[in-house]
Image (tube, rainbow, N blue to C red):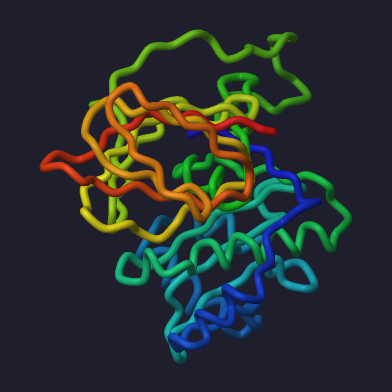
Length: 274
């Protein structure tokens, strides 16, 4: 899992997301010192003892460099920062039954705003598992040095490394079957090449006959229809699409696709910084 870099200058607003979660009975706040045992139990039960050790550092700082999500008095998610290294975000996790509600993004933003308050302009997301999530949520990019491994790929202390030059990301080839699927109500997608210097390529398959919730990205996107016939909602205009159709989607433009034929619409998409 690679490290990722995120700018703290133009973070998305967190208030609307927190308000939505409050309406569902979920609150996000810093844990109190006397809640350490409950948080340790949650992390060890749902994730790992290693993450317990990393997060414990948060309680040595004032204010505590950690946030928790609670449903009532029950901890359902957590995120930490400034624990593993200076300027690092993580670890973080949400209980399986509570995923898909925006809790992970709220915890992420709370921590990134915390890092912003400390004076950082950029932050490192250490060992980012769901690369696509971080790219879409906050525009993070994979760090293309040492294959993005950062401190998690080191066998020696950085001061005493025996190699002097970093490895730039090497060429690689992979197949779609090797990449896990991200499932959404109207489609599934696979990010094949993710976040290299702000560039990524993936494939999406739109299965529904009705438009889903429009997607809006902070970066620019291009897509190419590989199979299926349907319609592309681009901003407020609807366009017919078929195999061979290409479209450019500027930053901040809402878009969605629906099938109008019997088969899903399969597209190849690419993202890049404006």
